[in-house]
Image 1 (cartoon, rainbow, N blue to C red):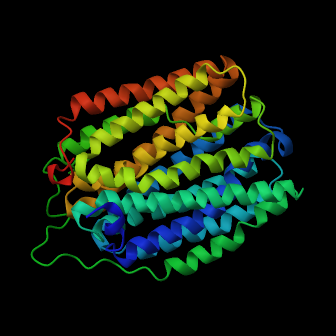
Image 2: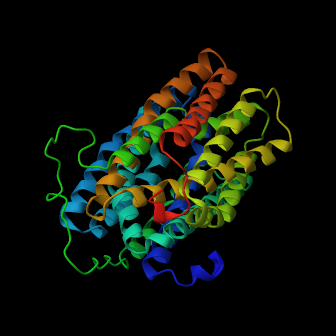
Length: 405
Protein backbone atom coordinates (compact mmCIF):
# COMPACT_ATOMS: atom_id res chain seq x y z
CA UNK A 1 0.00 0.00 0.00
CA UNK A 2 1.44 3.36 -1.07
CA UNK A 3 1.52 6.47 1.10
CA UNK A 4 -1.42 8.00 -0.78
CA UNK A 5 -3.65 5.03 0.08
CA UNK A 6 -2.38 5.04 3.67
CA UNK A 7 -3.51 8.65 4.11
CA UNK A 8 -7.15 7.52 4.15
CA UNK A 9 -6.46 5.25 7.11
CA UNK A 10 -5.03 7.92 9.36
CA UNK A 11 -7.22 8.64 12.41
CA UNK A 12 -9.31 11.76 12.97
CA UNK A 13 -6.85 13.34 15.40
CA UNK A 14 -4.08 13.41 12.77
CA UNK A 15 -6.22 15.30 10.27
CA UNK A 16 -7.56 17.64 12.94
CA UNK A 17 -4.09 18.49 14.27
CA UNK A 18 -3.00 19.14 10.69
CA UNK A 19 -5.98 21.41 10.04
CA UNK A 20 -5.30 23.34 13.25
CA UNK A 21 -1.70 23.86 12.18
CA UNK A 22 -2.84 24.96 8.73
CA UNK A 23 -5.11 27.63 10.19
CA UNK A 24 -2.58 28.71 12.83
CA UNK A 25 0.24 29.01 10.32
CA UNK A 26 -1.98 31.03 8.01
CA UNK A 27 -2.08 33.63 10.78
CA UNK A 28 1.55 33.21 11.83
CA UNK A 29 2.95 33.35 8.30
CA UNK A 30 0.76 36.33 7.43
CA UNK A 31 2.91 38.18 9.96
CA UNK A 32 6.28 36.39 9.77
CA UNK A 33 7.60 37.80 6.44
CA UNK A 34 6.43 41.26 7.47
CA UNK A 35 8.52 41.42 10.64
CA UNK A 36 11.75 42.50 8.88
CA UNK A 37 9.73 45.25 7.17
CA UNK A 38 8.23 46.35 10.50
CA UNK A 39 11.69 46.42 12.10
CA UNK A 40 13.38 48.38 9.32
CA UNK A 41 10.63 50.74 8.11
CA UNK A 42 8.52 51.29 11.23
CA UNK A 43 10.81 50.66 14.19
CA UNK A 44 14.17 51.62 12.59
CA UNK A 45 16.00 48.53 13.91
CA UNK A 46 18.67 46.36 12.22
CA UNK A 47 19.95 42.75 12.03
CA UNK A 48 21.29 42.77 15.60
CA UNK A 49 17.88 43.67 17.01
CA UNK A 50 16.33 41.01 14.79
CA UNK A 51 18.71 38.38 16.13
CA UNK A 52 18.05 39.44 19.73
CA UNK A 53 14.25 39.42 19.31
CA UNK A 54 14.03 36.04 17.57
CA UNK A 55 16.65 34.41 19.78
CA UNK A 56 15.09 35.55 23.05
CA UNK A 57 11.58 34.74 21.84
CA UNK A 58 12.46 31.14 21.00
CA UNK A 59 14.70 30.66 24.06
CA UNK A 60 11.93 31.86 26.37
CA UNK A 61 9.64 29.17 24.96
CA UNK A 62 12.21 26.39 25.26
CA UNK A 63 11.74 25.67 28.97
CA UNK A 64 7.96 25.69 28.53
CA UNK A 65 8.32 23.02 25.85
CA UNK A 66 10.11 20.75 28.33
CA UNK A 67 7.77 21.66 31.20
CA UNK A 68 4.60 20.93 29.25
CA UNK A 69 6.03 17.64 27.98
CA UNK A 70 6.97 16.45 31.47
CA UNK A 71 3.57 17.44 32.90
CA UNK A 72 1.87 15.62 30.03
CA UNK A 73 3.62 12.36 31.01
CA UNK A 74 2.42 12.78 34.60
CA UNK A 75 -1.17 13.77 33.84
CA UNK A 76 -1.85 12.13 30.49
CA UNK A 77 -3.77 15.22 29.29
CA UNK A 78 -2.57 17.07 26.21
CA UNK A 79 -5.65 19.05 25.19
CA UNK A 80 -5.54 21.78 27.91
CA UNK A 81 -1.95 22.67 26.99
CA UNK A 82 -2.80 22.74 23.29
CA UNK A 83 -5.76 25.04 23.88
CA UNK A 84 -3.79 27.36 26.15
CA UNK A 85 -0.89 27.58 23.74
CA UNK A 86 -2.98 28.48 20.73
CA UNK A 87 -4.96 30.93 22.85
CA UNK A 88 -1.85 32.93 23.78
CA UNK A 89 -0.78 33.12 20.14
CA UNK A 90 -4.25 34.25 19.04
CA UNK A 91 -4.05 37.07 21.61
CA UNK A 92 -0.48 38.24 20.93
CA UNK A 93 -0.35 38.40 17.14
CA UNK A 94 -2.99 41.10 16.46
CA UNK A 95 -1.46 43.28 19.18
CA UNK A 96 1.69 43.60 17.04
CA UNK A 97 -0.21 46.29 15.15
CA UNK A 98 0.07 48.54 18.22
CA UNK A 99 3.84 48.39 18.85
CA UNK A 100 5.87 51.58 18.49
CA UNK A 101 9.34 50.31 19.46
CA UNK A 102 11.35 47.11 19.08
CA UNK A 103 11.15 46.26 22.83
CA UNK A 104 7.36 46.21 22.43
CA UNK A 105 7.75 43.87 19.48
CA UNK A 106 10.02 41.69 21.60
CA UNK A 107 7.40 41.49 24.38
CA UNK A 108 4.67 40.29 22.03
CA UNK A 109 6.97 37.82 20.31
CA UNK A 110 7.79 36.43 23.77
CA UNK A 111 4.07 35.96 24.45
CA UNK A 112 3.49 34.35 21.06
CA UNK A 113 6.41 31.93 21.50
CA UNK A 114 5.30 31.13 25.06
CA UNK A 115 2.08 29.85 23.51
CA UNK A 116 4.11 27.70 21.17
CA UNK A 117 6.14 26.42 24.10
CA UNK A 118 3.01 25.30 25.94
CA UNK A 119 1.40 23.49 23.01
CA UNK A 120 4.22 21.98 20.93
CA UNK A 121 5.35 18.98 23.00
CA UNK A 122 1.81 17.90 24.03
CA UNK A 123 0.66 18.25 20.41
CA UNK A 124 3.56 16.16 19.10
CA UNK A 125 3.03 13.49 21.76
CA UNK A 126 -0.71 13.40 21.02
CA UNK A 127 0.04 12.95 17.33
CA UNK A 128 2.55 10.14 17.98
CA UNK A 129 0.11 8.36 20.32
CA UNK A 130 -2.67 8.50 17.73
CA UNK A 131 -0.94 6.30 15.12
CA UNK A 132 0.94 3.01 14.85
CA UNK A 133 4.78 3.13 14.70
CA UNK A 134 4.72 2.26 10.98
CA UNK A 135 2.57 5.36 10.32
CA UNK A 136 4.64 7.90 12.25
CA UNK A 137 6.58 9.27 9.30
CA UNK A 138 3.38 9.59 7.27
CA UNK A 139 1.47 11.23 10.14
CA UNK A 140 4.17 13.76 10.97
CA UNK A 141 4.76 14.38 7.28
CA UNK A 142 1.06 15.12 6.72
CA UNK A 143 1.09 17.45 9.71
CA UNK A 144 4.06 19.34 8.31
CA UNK A 145 2.49 19.44 4.84
CA UNK A 146 -0.69 21.03 6.22
CA UNK A 147 1.37 23.37 8.40
CA UNK A 148 3.29 24.46 5.32
CA UNK A 149 0.02 24.87 3.41
CA UNK A 150 -0.82 27.54 5.97
CA UNK A 151 2.64 28.97 5.38
CA UNK A 152 1.68 29.37 1.72
CA UNK A 153 -1.71 30.94 2.41
CA UNK A 154 -0.35 33.44 4.95
CA UNK A 155 2.40 35.03 2.80
CA UNK A 156 0.12 35.10 -0.27
CA UNK A 157 -2.47 36.95 1.79
CA UNK A 158 0.24 39.31 3.04
CA UNK A 159 1.45 39.93 -0.53
CA UNK A 160 -2.09 40.65 -1.70
CA UNK A 161 -2.71 43.07 1.14
CA UNK A 162 0.62 44.82 0.52
CA UNK A 163 -0.19 45.08 -3.19
CA UNK A 164 -3.49 46.71 -2.20
CA UNK A 165 -1.40 49.31 -0.29
CA UNK A 166 -2.86 48.44 3.12
CA UNK A 167 -0.76 49.73 6.03
CA UNK A 168 1.31 47.12 7.87
CA UNK A 169 -0.67 47.71 11.05
CA UNK A 170 -3.97 46.83 9.39
CA UNK A 171 -2.49 43.69 7.87
CA UNK A 172 -1.30 42.56 11.31
CA UNK A 173 -4.84 42.93 12.66
CA UNK A 174 -6.13 40.38 10.15
CA UNK A 175 -4.32 37.61 12.07
CA UNK A 176 -7.08 37.73 14.72
CA UNK A 177 -9.55 35.91 12.46
CA UNK A 178 -7.61 32.65 11.88
CA UNK A 179 -6.46 32.75 15.50
CA UNK A 180 -10.05 32.48 16.73
CA UNK A 181 -10.87 29.70 14.23
CA UNK A 182 -7.81 27.76 15.39
CA UNK A 183 -9.09 27.77 18.97
CA UNK A 184 -12.51 26.50 17.87
CA UNK A 185 -10.90 23.58 16.02
CA UNK A 186 -8.65 22.70 18.97
CA UNK A 187 -11.75 22.17 21.12
CA UNK A 188 -12.66 19.17 18.92
CA UNK A 189 -9.44 17.23 19.68
CA UNK A 190 -9.72 13.95 21.58
CA UNK A 191 -7.21 12.52 24.03
CA UNK A 192 -5.78 9.23 22.64
CA UNK A 193 -6.86 6.04 24.42
CA UNK A 194 -3.82 4.41 26.12
CA UNK A 195 -2.94 0.91 24.85
CA UNK A 196 -4.34 -1.97 26.91
CA UNK A 197 -2.18 -3.92 29.32
CA UNK A 198 0.18 -2.90 32.13
CA UNK A 199 1.85 0.44 31.52
CA UNK A 200 5.00 1.87 33.04
CA UNK A 201 4.61 5.39 34.35
CA UNK A 202 7.26 8.05 34.03
CA UNK A 203 7.90 7.90 37.77
CA UNK A 204 8.29 4.12 37.69
CA UNK A 205 11.14 4.24 35.21
CA UNK A 206 12.88 7.27 36.69
CA UNK A 207 16.67 6.78 36.88
CA UNK A 208 18.45 5.91 40.08
CA UNK A 209 20.74 8.88 39.42
CA UNK A 210 18.38 11.77 38.62
CA UNK A 211 21.27 14.14 38.06
CA UNK A 212 22.15 12.36 34.81
CA UNK A 213 21.31 14.50 31.79
CA UNK A 214 18.71 14.43 30.40
CA UNK A 215 17.08 12.22 33.00
CA UNK A 216 15.74 8.78 32.03
CA UNK A 217 15.94 9.12 28.25
CA UNK A 218 17.69 6.23 26.38
CA UNK A 219 21.35 6.74 25.34
CA UNK A 220 20.49 6.64 21.62
CA UNK A 221 18.00 9.45 22.08
CA UNK A 222 20.54 11.49 24.04
CA UNK A 223 23.03 11.15 21.18
CA UNK A 224 20.35 12.26 18.78
CA UNK A 225 19.74 15.37 20.89
CA UNK A 226 23.45 16.24 20.57
CA UNK A 227 23.19 15.97 16.79
CA UNK A 228 20.10 18.18 16.81
CA UNK A 229 21.90 20.72 19.01
CA UNK A 230 24.83 20.94 16.59
CA UNK A 231 22.53 21.45 13.62
CA UNK A 232 20.46 24.02 15.53
CA UNK A 233 23.62 25.98 16.40
CA UNK A 234 23.70 27.02 12.74
CA UNK A 235 19.94 27.19 12.21
CA UNK A 236 19.30 30.88 12.89
CA UNK A 237 15.95 32.55 12.31
CA UNK A 238 14.60 32.25 8.76
CA UNK A 239 13.96 35.98 8.89
CA UNK A 240 17.62 36.45 8.00
CA UNK A 241 16.94 34.72 4.68
CA UNK A 242 14.19 37.21 3.93
CA UNK A 243 16.35 40.12 5.03
CA UNK A 244 19.12 38.91 2.70
CA UNK A 245 16.66 38.47 -0.17
CA UNK A 246 15.51 42.07 0.29
CA UNK A 247 19.14 43.24 0.17
CA UNK A 248 19.69 41.23 -3.03
CA UNK A 249 16.97 43.20 -4.77
CA UNK A 250 13.70 41.34 -4.16
CA UNK A 251 10.97 44.02 -4.00
CA UNK A 252 9.03 44.53 -0.78
CA UNK A 253 5.84 42.95 -2.11
CA UNK A 254 7.89 39.98 -3.40
CA UNK A 255 9.23 38.99 0.04
CA UNK A 256 6.00 37.23 1.12
CA UNK A 257 5.82 35.53 -2.30
CA UNK A 258 9.37 34.25 -1.90
CA UNK A 259 8.54 32.71 1.47
CA UNK A 260 5.32 31.29 0.03
CA UNK A 261 7.40 29.52 -2.63
CA UNK A 262 9.51 27.90 0.10
CA UNK A 263 6.43 26.75 1.97
CA UNK A 264 4.75 25.49 -1.21
CA UNK A 265 7.67 23.17 -1.97
CA UNK A 266 7.72 21.96 1.64
CA UNK A 267 3.96 21.41 1.54
CA UNK A 268 4.14 19.22 -1.57
CA UNK A 269 7.22 17.23 -0.54
CA UNK A 270 6.73 16.79 3.23
CA UNK A 271 4.28 13.88 3.15
CA UNK A 272 6.09 11.67 0.57
CA UNK A 273 9.56 12.33 2.03
CA UNK A 274 8.43 11.67 5.61
CA UNK A 275 6.50 8.56 4.50
CA UNK A 276 9.64 7.43 2.71
CA UNK A 277 11.42 7.42 6.07
CA UNK A 278 8.94 4.76 7.25
CA UNK A 279 10.51 2.44 4.66
CA UNK A 280 14.17 3.41 4.23
CA UNK A 281 14.97 4.70 7.73
CA UNK A 282 14.72 8.07 9.41
CA UNK A 283 18.43 8.86 9.47
CA UNK A 284 18.94 8.44 5.74
CA UNK A 285 16.24 10.99 4.94
CA UNK A 286 17.26 13.32 7.77
CA UNK A 287 20.92 13.22 6.76
CA UNK A 288 20.00 14.21 3.21
CA UNK A 289 17.99 17.11 4.61
CA UNK A 290 20.94 18.35 6.68
CA UNK A 291 23.18 18.16 3.61
CA UNK A 292 20.64 20.16 1.59
CA UNK A 293 20.59 22.86 4.28
CA UNK A 294 24.37 23.07 4.30
CA UNK A 295 24.53 23.37 0.52
CA UNK A 296 21.84 26.06 0.45
CA UNK A 297 23.62 28.21 3.06
CA UNK A 298 26.99 27.84 1.35
CA UNK A 299 25.38 28.97 -1.91
CA UNK A 300 23.80 31.93 -0.11
CA UNK A 301 27.24 32.80 1.30
CA UNK A 302 28.59 33.23 -2.23
CA UNK A 303 25.76 35.33 -3.66
CA UNK A 304 26.57 38.83 -4.85
CA UNK A 305 23.29 39.72 -6.50
CA UNK A 306 19.76 38.43 -6.87
CA UNK A 307 17.57 37.49 -9.82
CA UNK A 308 14.62 35.28 -10.82
CA UNK A 309 16.69 32.18 -10.05
CA UNK A 310 16.63 33.20 -6.39
CA UNK A 311 13.09 31.80 -6.23
CA UNK A 312 14.40 28.43 -7.44
CA UNK A 313 17.14 28.50 -4.79
CA UNK A 314 14.61 29.24 -2.07
CA UNK A 315 12.45 26.40 -3.44
CA UNK A 316 15.43 24.12 -2.84
CA UNK A 317 15.37 25.31 0.77
CA UNK A 318 11.78 24.03 0.90
CA UNK A 319 13.11 20.53 0.13
CA UNK A 320 15.32 20.73 3.21
CA UNK A 321 12.28 21.59 5.31
CA UNK A 322 10.28 18.71 3.80
CA UNK A 323 13.05 16.19 4.50
CA UNK A 324 13.61 17.19 8.12
CA UNK A 325 10.61 18.71 9.92
CA UNK A 326 8.43 15.60 10.09
CA UNK A 327 11.26 13.06 10.11
CA UNK A 328 13.01 14.67 13.09
CA UNK A 329 9.89 14.23 15.23
CA UNK A 330 9.12 10.73 13.96
CA UNK A 331 12.65 9.74 15.02
CA UNK A 332 12.02 11.13 18.52
CA UNK A 333 8.87 8.98 18.78
CA UNK A 334 10.84 5.92 17.58
CA UNK A 335 13.59 6.35 20.16
CA UNK A 336 11.45 7.32 23.19
CA UNK A 337 9.65 4.93 25.57
CA UNK A 338 5.88 5.45 25.39
CA UNK A 339 5.69 6.51 29.05
CA UNK A 340 8.26 9.26 28.42
CA UNK A 341 7.12 10.44 25.01
CA UNK A 342 6.04 13.86 26.28
CA UNK A 343 9.36 14.33 28.09
CA UNK A 344 11.28 13.23 24.99
CA UNK A 345 9.45 15.72 22.79
CA UNK A 346 10.00 18.32 25.49
CA UNK A 347 13.76 17.81 25.38
CA UNK A 348 13.80 17.77 21.59
CA UNK A 349 11.72 20.92 21.23
CA UNK A 350 13.63 22.67 24.01
CA UNK A 351 16.97 21.82 22.41
CA UNK A 352 16.01 23.24 19.03
CA UNK A 353 14.47 26.36 20.55
CA UNK A 354 17.20 27.00 23.12
CA UNK A 355 19.93 26.82 20.48
CA UNK A 356 18.12 29.42 18.39
CA UNK A 357 19.15 32.17 20.83
CA UNK A 358 22.95 31.83 20.41
CA UNK A 359 22.49 30.88 16.74
CA UNK A 360 20.44 34.00 15.95
CA UNK A 361 22.57 36.31 18.08
CA UNK A 362 25.81 35.05 16.51
CA UNK A 363 24.33 35.13 13.01
CA UNK A 364 23.08 38.68 13.51
CA UNK A 365 26.43 39.92 14.84
CA UNK A 366 28.38 38.24 12.04
CA UNK A 367 25.89 39.46 9.44
CA UNK A 368 26.22 43.08 10.53
CA UNK A 369 29.89 43.00 11.58
CA UNK A 370 31.68 40.62 9.19
CA UNK A 371 29.17 40.45 6.36
CA UNK A 372 26.47 37.99 5.30
CA UNK A 373 28.94 35.63 3.58
CA UNK A 374 30.64 34.80 6.88
CA UNK A 375 27.35 34.27 8.71
CA UNK A 376 25.89 31.98 6.03
CA UNK A 377 29.13 29.99 5.69
CA UNK A 378 29.25 29.25 9.43
CA UNK A 379 25.62 28.11 9.46
CA UNK A 380 26.24 25.81 6.49
CA UNK A 381 29.28 24.30 8.23
CA UNK A 382 27.25 23.45 11.35
CA UNK A 383 24.69 21.60 9.22
CA UNK A 384 27.32 19.59 7.37
CA UNK A 385 28.90 18.69 10.71
CA UNK A 386 25.54 17.51 12.03
CA UNK A 387 25.03 15.34 8.94
CA UNK A 388 28.42 13.71 9.51
CA UNK A 389 27.72 13.15 13.22
CA UNK A 390 24.32 11.65 12.44
CA UNK A 391 25.92 9.14 10.07
CA UNK A 392 28.99 8.25 12.17
CA UNK A 393 27.72 8.40 15.76
CA UNK A 394 24.13 7.17 15.57
CA UNK A 395 24.95 3.77 14.06
CA UNK A 396 23.63 2.17 10.86
CA UNK A 397 20.67 3.91 9.27
CA UNK A 398 18.44 0.87 9.25
CA UNK A 399 15.17 0.69 7.38
CA UNK A 400 12.01 2.05 8.90
CA UNK A 401 10.71 2.36 12.43
CA UNK A 402 11.16 -1.29 13.25
CA UNK A 403 14.79 -0.48 13.89
CA UNK A 404 13.73 2.38 16.21
CA UNK A 405 15.64 4.76 13.97
